[in-house]
Image (cartoon, rainbow, N blue to C red):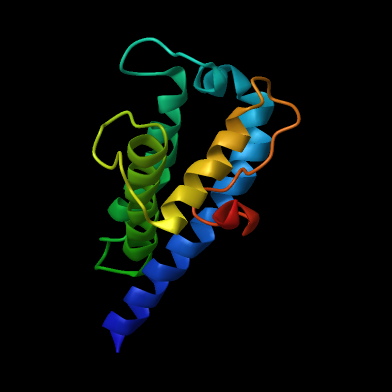
Length: 149
């Protein structure tokens, strides 16, 4: 029974992370931490890393802490919340950095309508070079209109 509970906690955390990501992207990245996110909205950023990549570290901290505290005194629910955050981070990397921005040329020629819709929505997000007037702040859950464009 515990394994089903832990799988449920992991999946629920993964799903909740989409909402947390949307809010963080809209109110933090396009808000008071814009100075870290701004270079990501420039047409051509230089180098392998951007200041925006600091958010990977920022989001990893709670996951690492939850892994640590999820093992004491024995394996508990905190570990699986950390696992859900980690899995979302991996999905974010694959979708955002590999598929959308092509920082790694792994999925250049997809014909999958869902993945094409994700790319379209993110391009709409990036048409705004400033922090104001943004749209499409989510990553996996985007408006349906981008799948039929």
